Image (cartoon, rainbow, N blue to C red; front, side, top):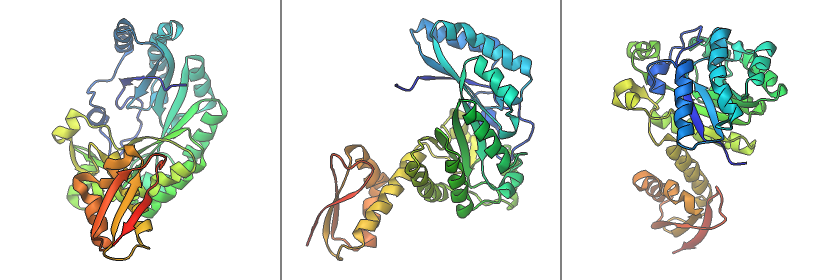
Length: 335
């Protein structure tokens, strides 16, 4: 079945009992106000008038199940008529691992929610504590298992480069998240957002910036773990917003094409493994799937230049090869 078009409704900071050091959901979501019942109705009426149907209504930006139950009921009730007439096919929401229990999941299921996203962020309790998350890795395991057993689709979110973390801890978190068997994951390398505690920590020198280069390196380690487990990465990096691009993101791993950079690095590593057997001075042609040509070449031909220099090649050409999938193949080696 084709994936439904998502209609996002932002509820930034609603239900969040803790101040995570990295978080300003209003800047991250690009939505300064939290939505209410009328906002849901207006958005769905607009979508319906445009002829949309089979939408997935998504409540993002806060911890939906931690807000007072009456507000949850109001927001979901606003969607009910559109579920009935087919404008909305299903509902998804994001929340905290420690804001999930059997009663809450039953309440959501009765009201058309089909996908629950849990903000795991890390599976290291020291990192979670240093980041002000207010929950543990065991909370994530418990909540993830409960979500799956209750019949929801499960999406897990993780972050790289949080306070107290490092590359090994991030990779281990990815392994533990993959072991929970989610239907998809989102990976968000840490961005230092203006006016957050993390900005203060960074400026005071108590937190080292997780740069774009850091994020590319660790995410190129992580993505193959999820790919090997058959778990799709449905988002890599924060969605660019005008607010973040205009200075809301003061440092860290904020880049509008972060996913492309990571996939480019993954292809570069695969190419390097093949080139170790190639003699210096050779002229080499490598092949990738047509859709991966740009990523293999790299931004400003960075991959081609780096590989030529590393392996002392006289020339390196990249060509499209049907059937290559996500791999890199050695097409020709000549003098």
